[in-house]
Length: 207
Image (cartoon, rainbow, N blue to C red; front, side, top):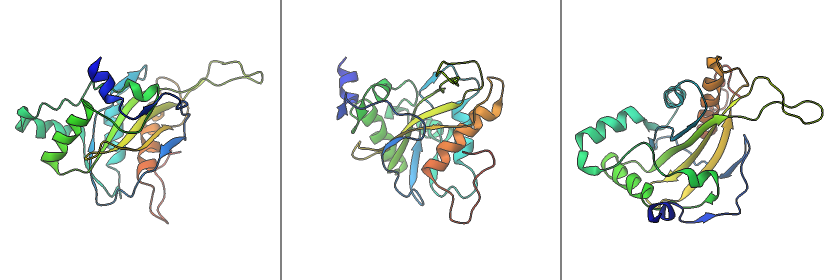
């Protein structure tokens, strides 16, 4: 319980749940920044590999930041096992229930230790990936039909623990066996973090 309370530092229980496209805070310019990228922490019923799709989308052409992707972090931690900095199963569920302005331990300690050995200033914490809302009929009743996938993510200042941005990004609706459903959601998250330069086309299928 102490660890759970610590990670909720600066949390506000009145924070209303966000819907796709909504966010709190701001995304600073990430061009030239070194950013730690954690694996997706919670998967609520989404097929495929959301961490791999996210990493692929972030590594697209013209990305700008230096992303330290999960596989890069795994190699770093393998060389420094004394860091005690787990990448998965972090206590992130508070993000889904309240507005978090600043993280505390144990997540903050993990960020600080990884940041110290990688010289990274920011961290992308993908809190969860989940199925979006079902389509509704003219009476507002949920129906069977294609639904989108949503990424719920936070961008955190490694040194202070302050949550700079928290948002929900959704891709194109699709069926469970449609690989574009997850890929388009990952592209939407990547575009939110690093918008295309003026005159540059967004990736095909991105929303």
